[in-house]
Length: 483
Image (cartoon, rainbow, N blue to C red):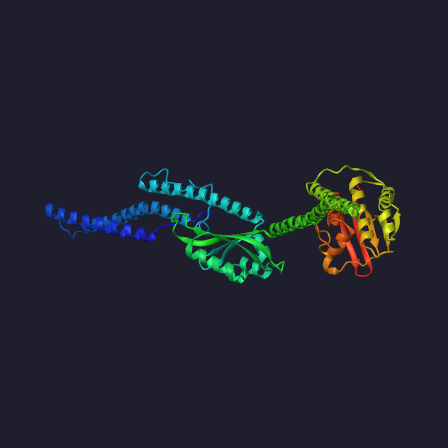
C-alpha cells in the first residue's frame, strides 16, 4: 500500500490568495462597469450575478489551488521517501510510478531530479552495504586482533580475534548490546593506554612490542602493536579515532631464543673438543721436539677420541638439519626384532663395560618406515639407557601394538637414577643435558633425544618420556601403521 501526502496548508494558502485576488479584481471591475454603464446595484439580477460570481471564484480557487498543490505533494512525498526510507518504504521497482510524465512544467523536472538522486542514493547504499560486508568478513578472517577506538578512548569496533584474546564473554555480550568500554577496562596495561592517548593527541603512528595478559594465558603473550590515527576522508586534519593491530610474535620470539641458544650451545660443544685437540697437539709437538715419546700413545688416543666426538657432533647436526628440512623418507619394511638385536650387538661392548643386562620383547609384525631412521632411534634410546644407568642395571626394549590407536609402540626402560620433574619439559630440546658434567664424561652430543623426536614426528608419530627419581626412566615412541 502506497502512502500519499497532500500539502493542505499550501492548498489553503493558494486557495485564499486566489479567491481574494480574483475576488477583489472582479468586484472592482463590476463597480467600474456599473459606473460606466449606469446600471443599478440593488436589483435582484445584480445580486444573483454577484453571488454567482463569488461561487465561480470559489470553484476556480479550489481548482487552481489543487492543481498547484498536487505536484508539490508528490515531490514532497518523494523527498520524504529519500530522507526516511524505512518509514516511507515502497517497492524498489516503482521508482517511475509517481512521475508526472503527462504533466509538463518545472514540477516534473524537480521530481525527475529527485528520482535521479534516489537512484544514485540507492546505488551508493548497495555499494556501502557490500563494502561493509567485505570489511566485516576481512576483519573476521584476520588472525591478528584488530581494535578501533574513538577520541574518548572507548571501543568502536573489534574483530572476533580481539574478543577471543582480550575480552570475557560478559564483556563481549555487553559490547554486542551497545555497551561502551574504555580501552583501559579491556587491556590493563598503562604503557599501551598511554601510547593510545598519545596517538589520539598527536596523530602520529606508534608501534611497540609488549607482553599482554590474555583471557586464555595468564602468563601473557608478546605482541607487536601498531597504533594508527584515523582521519576524516575530506578533512585530513580532523582526527576521529585510532586503529590498533596486534600481531602475535610469541612463537617468533621463542624461535629466536631457541636459535640463539642453539648457536651458543653448538659453539660451546665444538669449542670443547677443538680446545682439547689444540692443547694436546701443542704438547705433542713439544714432546716430539724434545724426543719425549712416553706420552705420545696416550695423546694420540685422546686426540682420536676428540676427533670422533667432533665427527659425531657434525653428523648429528647434519641429521637434525635434514629432518627439519623434511627430507623424504626411504620407506621399507622394518623388522623390529631383527633390527633390535643388531643394535644391541653394536652396543654390546658398552653394555658389557657397565655390566648392563638388556632384555627384549618384540611381539609385533613388520611395519613400513625408514629403516635407517628407526635404527637411529634405537641406537640413541638404548645407548642413553646404557650410558646413564647405574652400573649393573638393566634395560628393557619392548615392541608392542597399540590396539586402540593402531600404532606400533617402542618402549625403552631402564632402572637408573631417573630424571627429576624440572627437566622433563626440556628433555627433547637440542643440546639440553640433565647432568652436563656426566653427559660429557660418558660421551654424546646432546642431540640424541632431539633426533628421536624429529624422526618420530617425520613418521607421523610421537615420543614421550616417563620417569621418577630413583626408579628409572621410560621412553615411548609411537609409529603409525602405514598401508
